[in-house]
Amino acid sequence: MKLGLERSRAILERAGNPERGLTGALVAGTNGKGSTCAMLAAILRAAGHRVGTMPSPHLSSYTERIQVDGAPISEAEFAAALDWLRPRLEGITAELGPPTEFEILTTVAITYLARHCDRLAIEVGLGGRLDATNVLDLGVAVITNVALDHMQYLGDTVEKIATEKAGIIKLGNTVVTGATGPALDVIRTAAASRSARLWTLGGEISSKSRWASWRGSRLDVSGPGFDHRDLVIPLLGSFQSANAALAVAAAAALGVDAEEPVRQGLSQARSPGRLELVAERPALLLDGGHNPAALSQLAADVRRLAGDHRVGLVFGMMSDKDIKGALTELRRLQPARVVFTAAESPRAEPAEKLAAAWGGGAEVVVPAARAVEAALAAAGPEDLVLVSGSLYVVGEVRPRFVTAARR
Image 1 (cartoon, one colour):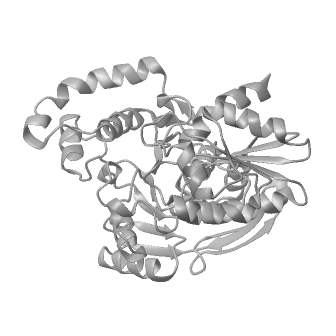
Image 2: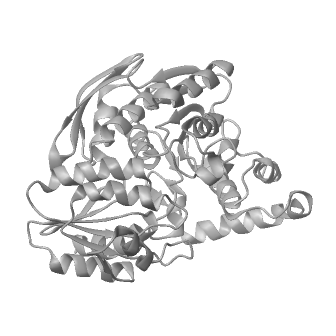
Image 3: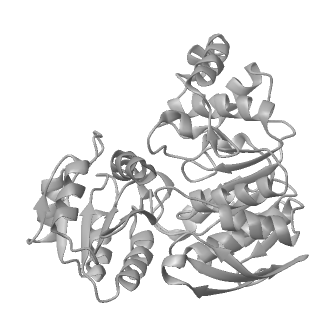
């Protein structure tokens, strides 16, 4: 990892600056980026646009990181795009150092999406100011929320992290944010300094959501030039209503504020690996939440969904995360059974260490797929099993259950 934009700009210049003139939204934030992008993209598609996205990380195939209208780039197209770029990378290493994988991926994605799409909904990789995606000025900047995460790169206070995320705001942008408190103060100052129009959730954007349990939620949302009532949000989790409100506002900022595309888009939106139900009896939920703020909301929602039934937990996390804080939040689940596991990644925290930090009464099972099998085998038909802690863990187990559900 090398934070900075010099290499990305140099590569894009050699590629003919395909980023110029692109329109859409660049989405930063601590949590909710992927879901907000998914809902915004669905609304824009319902309005007739061809929409490019860059989900990060991928769940099953690397090609998922470049998508047009929800369909990943083919392996052949990805290889061709990379082959086209390869000679244009010559000289970058000598001048600025070797480009990172993400810098190369971002250039490949922008070059490909610029040829195939008329709108983009792009998720920032890390932070904002120095992330490779910040070479884009799409007209709309979305900052979902700000909490403590990636502190070794972004800073050890909410204000410092907010400063990094506010770095995506460009001159004259419309900024849409769900941030609150000191983080909002930072974003407000940054927007003013760049003559950007600011819409805040709870300020210019008014929303009211209603919990619908396993059917998701319903949302009323209004703001400058738009007013929508009783929108259906099929994505599970109380947190998705705020993401949906931001997506609706971002769509309006991009000129899509009519009732039908907003309603249709939200009803069709999917966000794989985000409180996703992939099996029933027992219910199996997958969620890539990996910081205390996300896991706090997740624990409350899963406990609410489970009601009086038992919850089984399968958990694996990357070693550079706030493991102590995450486990503290997960205790709110009051899980009847806890199985710790680890993704097949050198960054993964060993399952034995997670179990030791939990403090007893937990199992250790690897790989992740076998851990899920053990949790399901011990659950009753009315129980619920949650797999969480990392999208890498979710990505390892998801294909098996999604494929089985389609049979």
